[in-house]
Image (cartoon, rainbow, N blue to C red):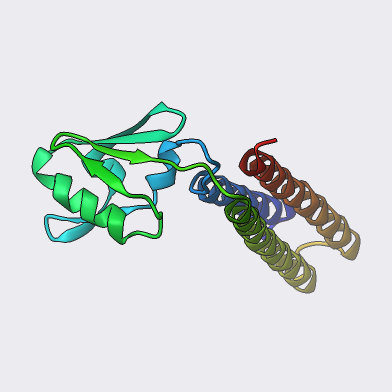
Amino acid sequence: MTADDILLDAEERMEKAIAKLKNDLTGIRTGRANPGLVDSLRVDVYGSPTPIKQIAAVSAPEPSQLVIRPFDPSTIKDIEKGIIGSDLGLAPQNDGKVIRLNIPALSGEVRRSMVARTKELAEEQKVAIRNVRRDGNKHADQAEKDKEMTEDDRDSLKKEIQDLTKKYEGQATELAKAKEAEVMGD
């Protein structure tokens, strides 16, 4: 592998880690209704677990309420069952056409646990970013052993990989801080 290939691969994989973190953070409650809260919810419909986005439209008409409008009205009971069985801790209200989820205000204890979860998610992705750095460094060492690059080239490549690592770890930290501020209501 050339130095550019190694660097490109590392950067792409670090980007994916940040994208995953962004996606994971949308599922964390902030006290405001957010359609992202139910994105990860899978509902048993037609005999298989299906993401809620594929079977219903989810909207937040008010800051403290989500409305789930099934595309097929016959699936409303299944969606309701899926919400009750999930770890969301929300009680669905079914009027036969739509399901309403009232999002209660978060207590201080719940907010702290959400902040802790945010930090966990950020740390998981930082570890993933560091693993990408380790892999990139291994490739650099291997390329130097295989006489594809000089020792100086390897060292400068490792420095570039380290710079990328710092950049993406910083992004993960910033995303987590922003989410923490949102959860704490700052």
